[in-house]
Amino acid sequence: MASASSTKLRPLGDRLVIQPTPREEMTKSGIVLPDTAKEKPQEGVVLAVGPGKTLDDGSREAMDVAVGNKVLYAKYAGTEFKVDGEDLLIVSQKDILAIVED
Image (cartoon, rainbow, N blue to C red; front, side):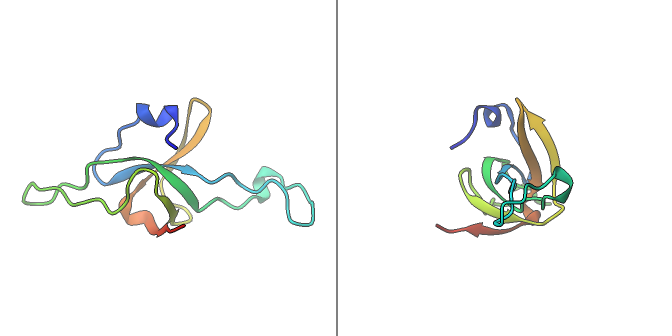
């Protein structure tokens, strides 16, 4: 499921790279939404995971999420950017609200 661009990214600390679920282009009644009216997605797939936060004693905190997990994240979390034309997001693990189980 990981894309080619995710192999170029290695998040640091407790950060992870997410590919947001595509935004709705049209309402259920068929009205096309302009970019300004679209809700920011809050769900996505984890493409890369950092090694975990370094604790005071030098050990690493374990990461609760893994590559391939579908997650829900805070509405205005992270930093958006593009890699090879793909919209991606880097967030801290603390901004992950839940893992979506299928």
